[in-house]
Amino acid sequence: MDHRRTEQLYAVVSPGLEGVCAAELSALEITPQEVTVGGIAFAGRLRDLYLANIWLRTASRILVRFAEFRSRDFPDLYRRAHRLPWGRFIQPEASVAFRVTCHSSRLNHTTRIAETLESALNQALGRSTNPVGDNPQLILVRVVDDQVVISIDSSGELLHRRGYRQSVTVAPLRETLAAGVLMLLGWNGTKPLADPMCGSGSFLLEGALLARQQAPGLDRLFAFMNWPGYREGLWNLLCSEAQRLAVDVPLAISGADENPRAVIAANANCQRCGVAEQVLIDQRRLSEQPIHDGQGLVVCNPPYGKRLDLGENPERYYAELGRQLQRAYPGWQLAMLCSNPSLVKATALPFKQIASLDNGGLNVGLFATVS
Image 1 (cartoon, helix red, strand yellow):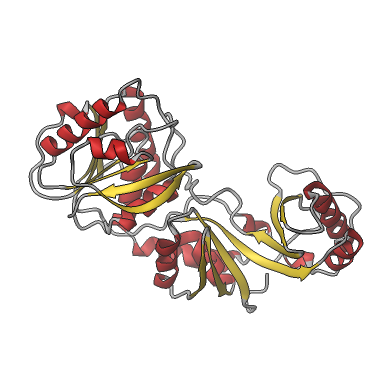
Image 2 (cartoon, rainbow, N blue to C red; image 1 turned 60 degrees about the vertical axis):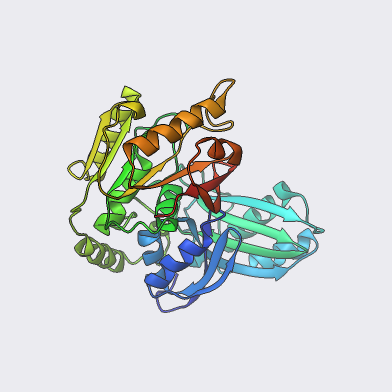
């Protein structure tokens, strides 16, 4: 990828977080061109691609829109693909993996489409086969109404894999969703944050990164680092600039869980993330929480639906949850994720749904009281 050339880019986003991600792009002085369900289209140069991968807290991937054309048969698909400048993104020795989806098109055999494109790519790069590799370059292909769109993934591993969370519990919350929830709630690090059911600590860790103004992508590798046009000097410069922007966390961020293994995992993740001194996590039930004076934000991801078994009477569980939250945090804003509005109603708290989100393929609502 030529650093002087403007490319069409696309941030893949979990449904419900598109507006938050668009605002993140604008904060980077990158103009969103089109916001659609599941992503944001924007234009940018190499610097913008690097910045998006370093800074976006809610995006899952950053793609380069490599090619778009109409095709209705495999010989034509091969001819068009063979003429594409694959060498701008793929090293001759690099392994690639195609991921294809089709809808309402004459080309409707995903495996054969992938094989055809791989053959065209190999010929264009002057090689006979696709080398075997542990981390192949992902190429996403979408065929809709005979229109073929080919995108090159610049991120590699999904962006929620920040690099700090190696210890997990049952049904962990993705970091991108945790960050998005905090941003939807308007939490910016100026008031205390608590999660009394913290699991492996996603809300607390993402809250600490937000409060510190720390870029989430500083401690990981990216697919673009293997591209022919990778500019290590530019990357290091942008990382250094991001590190200089980080600030100390002056406020209280605290969490708890009744499961001792969850507490161990959360504390280990805080240590790896470098925020162990800013985040206090202990083992206790919600019913054992003392009364917290003042104001702040309590956010939690309690058990619901298929995610975790609540037994035969989940309403009773949520009624007790509501009583304990109101007792322990009387002046705080309360928020939770839940897939079932009737369970939220069972808390008897004045929750209002402010967003519909996706948590591991399960549609969930973000519910909050008025701050």
